[in-house]
Image (cartoon, rainbow, N blue to C red; front, side, top):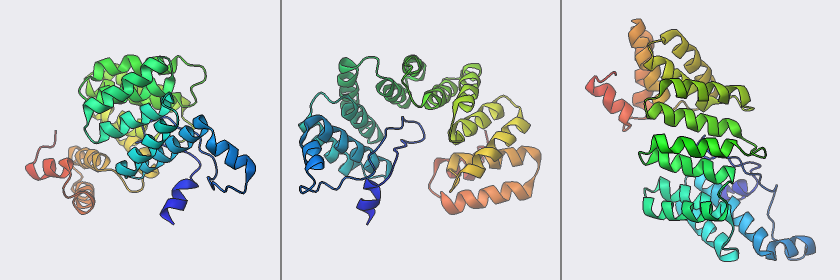
Length: 266
């Protein structure tokens, strides 16, 4: 049942950060359906299908199966750019940075201006301590008039600029993401809440956090941690306790909860 549900998802949404790639409504691989049979034996189409399946398994938290699907995709068509790009993200999540770098380099060599490849490689750089270098790749992704999800690249650019300590850049990128978003931009709202908190503009931080939390189910550990600190600053012990209870109940092993136990509120 879980496998069938994965196959029938209509869109892929990577980590709240990645590009959306359209997925066919179903893959029945029925040899009696002549048209489907012909399509499934086409190398490029096979590579596309297995890349999309790999993406869905990655999103569902099963990187091992994702890697198997991506291997099948590249066996079918070794020049299929998106398979390298997605596999690079899977290797990044597994902290296999050498393999990730190899995959992204292959993808960039094949399609240096592809917006999804640039966005994904930018995220890889950001995740590996090269936040400032990552911005150029997000901006390169945004140059493409065919890029369907520019809000995601702006969100990623804002997130990574914030990590690099560039609060002005982060705020500008994230506000742009909000302008372009078609899905509420929960990630951009949460990142803006962090930016305003860092700047000491706590009421703005509270507004953006409240918006983000209304769109989250369940709330993330970093959202709860930010809410806890905002309530603590406001002197609202009841609100602080509510966030602390959720953080303890949902994420007892998280870094955020460990910081709470240590009293490291900044």
